[in-house]
Amino acid sequence: SPRKAIYENVCELVGKTPVVKINKLAPEHVELYAKLEYFNPLSSVKDRLALAIIEDAEKKGALKPGQTVVEASSGNTGIALAMVCAAKGYPFVCTMAESFSVERRKVMRGLGAKVIVTPAPQKGTGMVKKAAELAEEHGWFLASQFDNEANWAYHANTTGPEILVDFSDRQLDYYVTGFGTGGTFTGASQVIKQARPDCKVILSEPANAAMVSSGEAQVPGESHPAWEPHPIQGWSPDFIPGNLQTGLGMDLVDEIVPIGGEEAIQTSKALATQEGIFTGISGGATTAAALKVCEKAAPGSVVLCMIPDTAERYLSTPLFADILAEMNEEEEKISKSTPSAQLPPPEDA
View 1 (cartoon, rainbow, N blue to C red):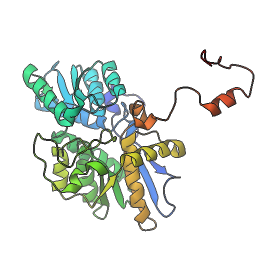
View 2: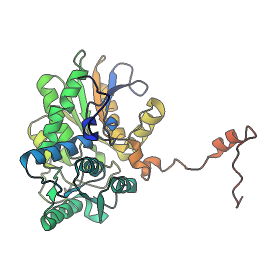
View 3: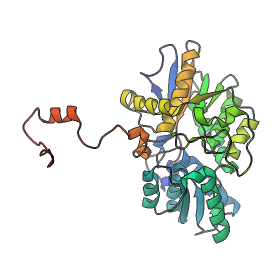
View 4: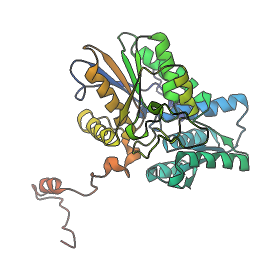
C-alpha cells in the first residue's frame, strides 16, 4: 500500500523498509540487493518483534494496562521495546550483559527504560535468567523474544510479504540472513519458500560460534558448547533460540555460511564508504555472507540480504576503533590550506 505522510503514533512506522541495490561491492555477473531495516523508527529490524510481542500480549490479555515489561537484550530489542512501551504507556526494564555497547544502554535510558547490567562472563544465558527472575519476583510481563512465536509470526506477516511484493516483477534466487532470535529467518524464510520454492535460503553465523553448523543439540537454559565470544553484536547469543529451532525444524535452510568477525567489520566499513550504507557489524556480516554466495552464483542470479541495524549502535565497538574524533594529519593539512577558522595548536604541542 502507498506510504502515508501522517501517522497516529510511532508504532505505525514499523515495517515497509526499502530494498536497495548494492552497486560497487557486488560481482558484475549477479545482482545483489539489501533490505535496509534501519529505516524502521528506532533503526533496527527488532522494532518489528517488539511491536509484535506487545500487541500480541495485549490481544491475549497477557499484558495489563500499566504493567511493566521486562526483557533480556543485547540492545536492539531493548531499544525497540523501550520505544513501543513509551508510545503505549508501559514501563520497561531491560537486562543486558555488560559486554554490549554502552550507547545502547544510553538510548534505552533516554527512552525512559531502566537497564539492569549483568556480568559479561554469564553471557546471554545470564541476562535471560535475570529477566525471568525479575518477571517472577515483581509480576512483570516477560517478552521472551527468543521463544515467543509472535516474533516470527510477525515476520511471516510483514517482512516476508514485503520481500515478495518488492520482487514480484523479477527473480529472487537467494535470501541471505543471520540470526539473533531467529524470528526474521523463520518467519520471512517460510513465506519466501512457499511462494518461491526455488529461492535458496542462506543462514549465516559467526565462524567461531557456529552452533547450528556444529550439529550439537541445545540444552535448555545452558550455554551451547560450540559458542565462543564474537564481535557480531545482535547475532548468535550463546544458545540456539527456540524461534530459530522452529525454522530449522521446518527445513528452511539450504546452506549455512560462517563469517569471521574481522570480515564482518571490514564489510560494514566497505558498505559505508563505497555504498553509503551505514550499518553495524551484523549488517556487514550478512552482506559478507551474501558476497560469498554471489561469488559462486550463476550469471544473472539475484541475491537479497538483510541489513539489521545502523552503525550508530556500534560507536564504542571495534567497528569504530580506528576512527578518531580528532582531526588526523590529512585533515589538519586541509585545514591549514586556507587561513581562516583554524583550531589553536594543542597546549602540549
